[in-house]
Length: 257
Image (tube, rainbow, N blue to C red; front, side):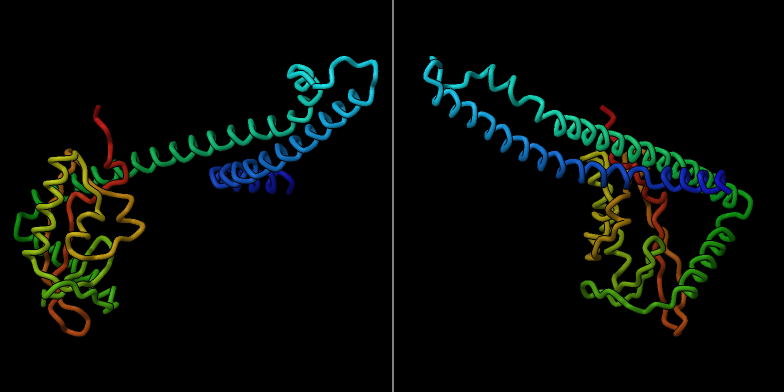
């Protein structure tokens, strides 16, 4: 029983280590400021008392407290804030390292999944042929639209064709020409800046960003193309699905230099 509880607690701590360390860093920052303020007030009182004591002592030939004397009198007061500040810095550094490791692991897992998907797609194209592979892709797109009957449509521009974005699951009205122009803008950004986020692509279409689109994108090694499929919504309205391939990845904004 105790062993199981210990295992559960350890698992919980491991899963939430980054959040716990970040919270510790926030609390530590505030605590360091508070302890430093208190130590400063106490130090001022000690210095003031020592100065008054010397002024009242007729045998004293020095009324002002010297710098080294100040240090010797008050340095113990600053040990708690120094210790807490050091612990806060360590917590922030550890939280950043854990987040970086998890991001790297996520990127690695995504790369493996993307490679497997690419291999599967190439093999399907090889075995089925262009026509059957395209039909299979259309069937998958139709199933996605059928299973997502949400008809909240984002109206952008004067396009009169209903689109369904396979990545974010959103309906919007546009045209194939506008989608291709937005993709050309992505290609231009990759050519000029070596990378481009998914948000930039949707900006060109007039679609608002999401948390997902802010985190992923492409680079010079993963230049995207768009694949269209013709489907019908549950209410019998013609709809084109839009799929970007390869899919954007989280570690797109790498620096090769």
